[in-house]
Length: 117
Image (cartoon, rainbow, N blue to C red; front, side, top):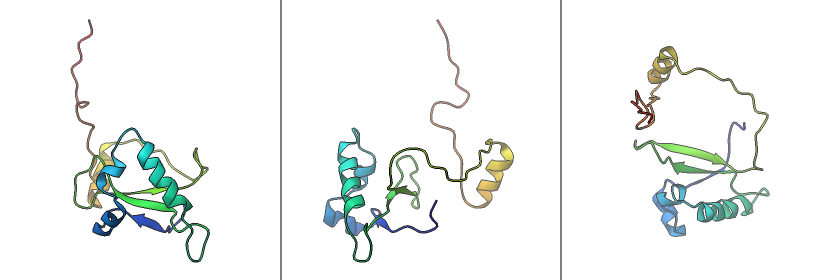
């Protein structure tokens, strides 16, 4: 994964000039967001082929004031980037909380009592 990217910042009030609101990254179906992504991806920059390599957006399910995500533009599909799979255990959650990242269980899934008929 690249260390730096040029991202269109959709979290700034200036994005309103381009009719971009937080709804863009939460709406379904995805036709409209995909059209915007195509324009961002294909807009030429002054010094390189693409002006934007990503967008910076407010995340859909995190309501914190600094809830920002980055979506990278490229060909679809899996990448050979190095990654590591870690089980989410109490030790990992504690380490994440130490640096300000809080892990929550999805709504309605914690300790669910399901009755099967």
